[in-house]
Image 1 (cartoon, rainbow, N blue to C red):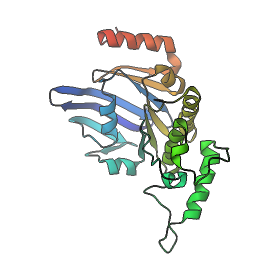
Image 2: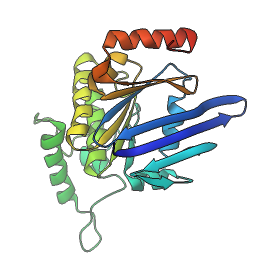
Image 3: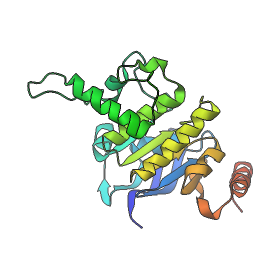
Image 4: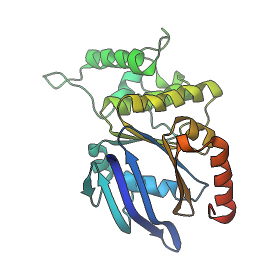
Length: 251
């Protein structure tokens, strides 16, 4: 199988705490991989290694088949790895177009901000990718007026627009209403439709099962299960996770 991300025998310790122990984790091209586990399972540490925030104590990381070492946050972004955190990382007091192009502004040949072009591209993204049809939402709308689900959508579309190859959704449904959650799950599926890959992290197993092609269960820093979603029902997955939480094993 062709993988965009491969992590082999990844271990990470913080003082007396063994956060990860010989973890194998991989994301195929054009797939959504769900990452689940209780608090303290190691999900955040694993993602921080993927994004260059932490360095593993041991193990190897490959991106598009190429080994990467001493990965930094900036280098991870250059590789096409983008994370959409639950905080959404948007500037609430800025307009939609400014949020889309923040840090990557388009300029004219004279070096000035090309506001008209950024507004037009934002409008195209709103209709083509975000699904915004309301006249109340325009490129110059202030993001503070958007719902939680709309903010998540903006962050995801921004990542897609700048050619992210691997998008990490970190607890994206937290604090969202039912209708906003449904829209967010559609955005996650749109990542795959765009030919990209996604790591979907959520405490709600129902959400993960509904969008992921494969689900990896972490428990106390180790991989406790790795399942193709088509081969396991939601009820079976929940039962296995319950057994892992109680005993640390699927046996």
